[in-house]
Image (cartoon, rainbow, N blue to C red; front, top):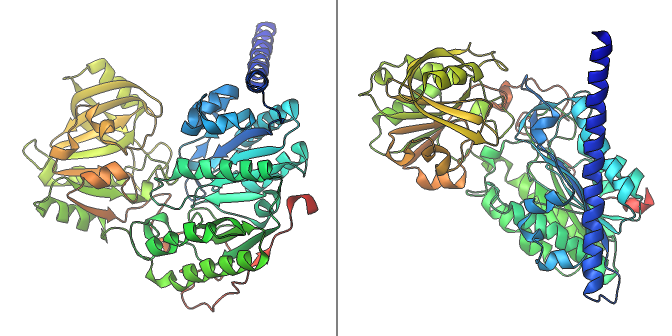
Amino acid sequence: MKHASFLLILSCILIAAVFFSFQQNKSFIAAKQTEKLQSEKGHAKALPRIAIAGLGIESSTFSPALTHEEAFHARYGAAIFAYYPFFTTDSPLRQRAVWIPTLLGKSLPGGAVTREAYESLVQKTLDSLQKNGPYDGLFLDIHGAMSVVGLDDPEGDFISRIRKVIGIKTLISTSMDLHGNVSWRLAQNTDLITCYRMAPHEDAMETKQRAVENLLKRLESGKGKPTYKAWIPIPVLLPGEKTSTRIEPAKTIYKAVAPAASQEGIIDAAIWVGYAWADEPRNHAVVMVTGDDKDKVTHTAEQLAKSFWDARSGFAFVAPTGSLKESLDKAVKSPKHPFFISDSGDNPTAGGAGDVTWTLQEILKRPAFKTEKGPSLIYASIPGPELVKKAIEAGVGGKVDGYAGAVVDARYAPPVHLVGTVTAIERGDVNAEVEVVVKVGSVSVIVTQKRKPYHKEIDFTRLGLAPRQSDIVVVKIGYLEPELYAMRADWILALTPGGVDQNLERLPYKRIQRPMFPLDKNMKTPDLSAKLVPASDKL
């Protein structure tokens, strides 16, 4: 038996090695096919060779959840092109370089990434880069708020290790989420850098395309690395729900970024809010400006930093807020439907575990929702794989009795007991895998095999739910994503508990730099002068 087990393990290892080798070959083949096509088209000048790589996740250190490698749904080689609308086969951008896609991993926000998962994904990226070099440029697509067990500043570590493989001459253009963190090490090792200018992130793909365009322009013009990179840390740490660009002051602050970046002598300008739910020294707001005109680069960076700092006391929640009780009381009494409630403390798209049951328990306790004649309420969602199995066995129309949630995060409430009727069963969602709807009184509870965010109307309608006709819709979310925002008749953000608690003063910060606004409300004005970052080939 021991011999058989050893052979089985050895076979699994060999299969994994063959698979990864195959994926690396796909990167190599994709590059060669591009080179061949461009050769056939008669390019007189050799096109730049540009690699593509990236890892993205927002991970809370205040959540007990852990994120494993499979959560990143890694793409390899040519499959990476499909992620970017601007990289279609016949797109102009695709024709301007020989692209070498390596590994791209994007995970739903969650808890800290295990060290094993991080090392595996990084090593696969480095192996592919090593195999397919050399490169003129690299498009690095990261989020910037990854936390890894036992490792500070993962993105800084990642780019430093990339530099050791591709060298210091290669231009790196980095695209980020504005809720990411820009450490000094990350600023040193990248050449060009930009981030989203909208929250919600309706300009995500536009930003990634801008990062690529910036890189191509510097390579095609021969200008190469920017002469100056200005970096300014701002000791402010705020949640995204207080810095939405839908409202002031962020609306005006971010409106100034594009004009700042379009000045002669400047390549790009960016403001990062930072990520509030991780306890690391790098977590705070940052401004970076890159370009060739020293005075403009430094002056612009200082202007943007000052505008952010001066507005610090004006940042407020993007919606009215209240306790869950206040939110439910208001929703039940309101004549406006659908009335949306954000269950914000366990928002899976901010890093929450997604399985905190506290809010759902409180809803089900209310007499108003105990019969079918009560106000109709949709709750999205709670993971409960065992309950999902029972629902499948019962079938649509059948009765189910079981428990869901609180497997990962049981700090606030135990698993929720659901006794109701199955009204829908759907399979195949990339995140949830299987979704069922259980009707309990007047509440339709979406129970999932694995956690899933609910951001679009089709997320509900494919389950036979009609959010527009519902009295109340409760979603594990912070600010409403565009489709939900457009659908709402009214909205309140409930200050509920969880790994991404909106009340930052309740979180046990120990390692962030202090003083930090708003934790230290009466702090002195910090030094907001621009710090010039050494070029990556001068390190």
